[in-house]
Length: 541
Image (cartoon, rainbow, N blue to C red; front, side, top):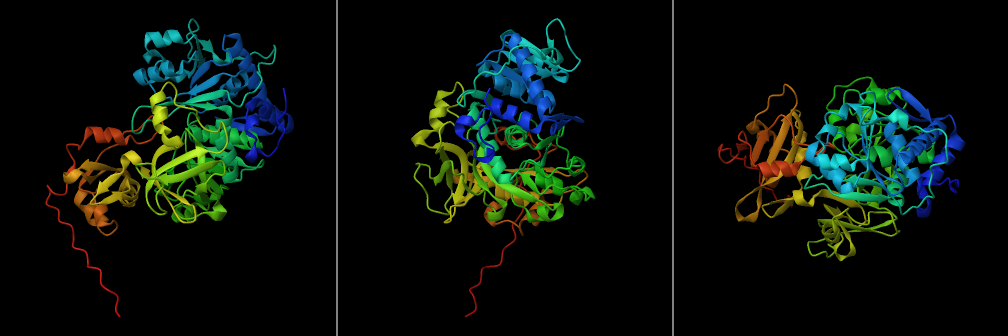
């Protein structure tokens, strides 16, 4: 098989975005240098390639061929990476599934994807595998178990997949072949399958290398799950491309994050947008600044975070369907902005009739690629949803944003989570940021609640820090000095936990469907009166 013809992975040609040649090149050039560390074990580039090819041979010997779909339900482990790469070599498509999926939700993904095989962790055999409906179980011609909890009469041990001898399992690479089927998390509705062809899957990895300036000498630490695109397509894949070392945490822990980053010598790291505030809420420790992490992807700019932890948060914007379409280099960043449009993309802000709005005005973010095969061709088995998303030849993200005169974009809110209050379009993100700044609040969401006249009242659902004592009136007293009047909530309720998708995103739509909880506090019913605010005075002549 051919060796990749370029070492400029940040600008990898679309037609060269296939894994086989890159994996071979790194194995030959990097040899015994460390590539992947997980669960206390480090695998070199050469060892990764060798194990990957042995797993590919084993899958082929058990009937898996190019075009087949292989489902994966694994926590962070080396077997996840080896299987993913093995499927790439064979031309099969990986279906990463969240390890929390059970029953009907799991059935839907397996059925919709047409998975022919399932590779599952031993801890999930009873919890997940046994919950699959009989017709779906019959669809799976091969079930492989990682670990020792094995029913040898029905399942294959992962270790037994390895075939070290035999013909090379790699098929000719095609940048247009589907590499994986990724299911959206469904925060506003049911999940949709997103087919990612090879060139699409590599696009965010190339951009990640640009945004982070990751080098061969770097160590990337990620505690995020591999079934999520950040740890995979923006983590171990770009590390492979550039020859860097990827270290996987088993799961995110706020109390262990900086200790683990320090101990592995990380120079770059991962978060998602909700994590920086959680880390800031932790007690200070020597590890806050003992680490070598100088850039973290991806988080909103936060001066307090960067000062305390001596690092930089990197901004970007993208979706599963598109990859990264906007990004902000540290040297050129602008506070609050997610950056300018990627050079491979057109982007604009439009109104409800799809006409562009003036700079500074909010509207929906729509995008379209300038290069072929760098985004999804359509939702799997959902032609109507595909047409709706692609109306007027622009992909509609469902997100509200703004663009300034200089071309910088700003994320405002999810379109379906927008709140209309007293003639103002209220960003739930802005309200949530204001409420979450209270020292007793662990996390919160802002939701619209129907109000007379077709507008919305604002509803806050919040979780308190352990042992915190805070009443709704006390929170209102505090917020009056910190939020505009039209952003002040009419309803406040405290709950033990917020509902989440398996990928840990908050399910706002469930809270909307449930309506006000029995313990919700109503400002009007309580007779709470907002303080009068001083009138704005004219400047003295």
